[in-house]
Image (cartoon, rainbow, N blue to C red):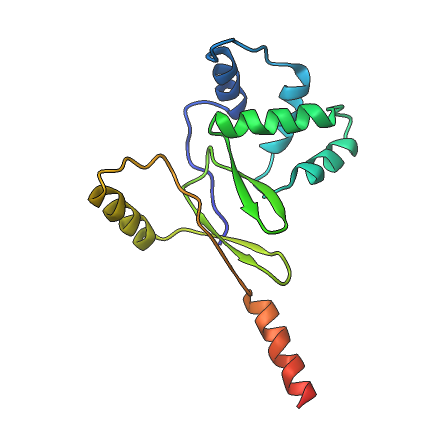
Length: 161
């Protein structure tokens, strides 16, 4: 399933600028941050910080490693990105401009599949309401083995027998 973007009132850049300006100690929006935000939101994909650094090296954009890590944390705080902790490391996902969604992660090949489920949303609303809890968001990652890896394992078993 490929998620399509949803209409938003601000661009990621303007939302991030607003976030930086509204901090207890307002922060300036740098050219490196602008290039980073532009690159991250040019396409919808999950990425690791090191992968992002390597991609940026291949472009004319010069963004330091420290700036990448600091800016990613700020983008998460601003509600633009979501951090997903996996056994293999941290992955970032767009949280702004895309509908709420969850993930299936294959433990064999690392494939990450996005999905939406109204049934899960209903359960979460019921559970939070029963505890008088106001949910600000959630991250659901289901780990297992994808269809392709399952099929490859079945073929391998048949060949061994």
